[in-house]
Amino acid sequence: MSETYTFEEFKGIIERLRAEDGCPWDREQTHASLKPCMSEEAAEVISAVNIYDRTGNSENLAEELGDVLLQVVMHAVIAEEEGIFTMDDVITGVSEKMIRRHPHVFGKVQVSDSGEVLKNWDEIKKKEKTGKEWVDRELPDAVSEVKRHLDRVLEKHEEKVRANAANAVKTPNIP
Image (cartoon, rainbow, N blue to C red; front, side):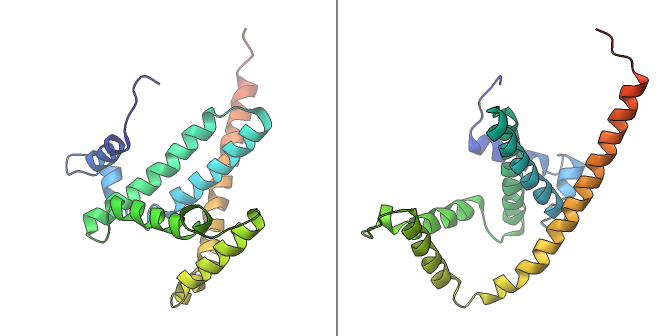
């Protein structure tokens, strides 16, 4: 790694890519068009965690987490352009959620083990979702959509493996 970037610099890179004189592909992206990318990147994080668990090699994990971060920031920048919310809103929302859902850390609730933490988490989450049941109704369709995205990812991966195998047969091993 030759240079270290801050979160704000990274966000600035994404904003530059989406600027009028930026990248045509990045400028064309919408929340909807990025859905397959998010599905694929989430699967790649899981793959990277599996590699890390088996080998201790974290290089791929850092890269794939960066790709998920790219997706999050891209969605937030698009939302800012649309005037619906900002990256600060995203960070504030998740920060407030973590504080609310951890009253044993940020409040006066006592817990004896992680089982109690999860029980409290579920109760707090249930209260937060009251009146928002429509969100849960969308989940089955979203899961089906993710499965379709990942089926396409697997097809592309299998094509790549076949192409690599075909090239390996054509190219002799030269030390």
